[in-house]
Image: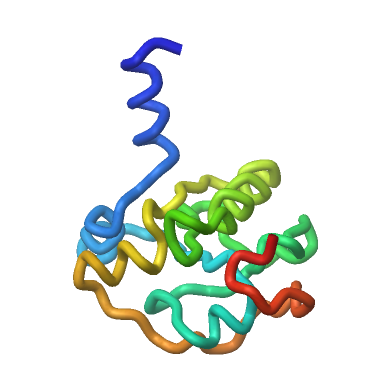
Length: 133
């Protein structure tokens, strides 16, 4: 892969906090998907995010997700790969997906608020760690 193709692909599949916030301000449809455990989601997540732990993602568990909206996956941050696992599984199921760079950590560093999570999709209650292996 040449250098230009690499950077084009990176921008096609990743998004940063500022771009998410701008899309939200402009009313562009996107759905934030927290791929961590229900416990991590309950402790802290991004406003408006749903919890869909990566280990339990299947066609059945995602049947109610919109197909016409960009799904933005995230996890704790750069040391966690739950967002990548979530993005991969959702892309394999045919969803349009981007991964949030830096996750919750960089979201907060950029000055955006977090909230305690609400009701989880609860498809994977077995994992209590944030990234869930």
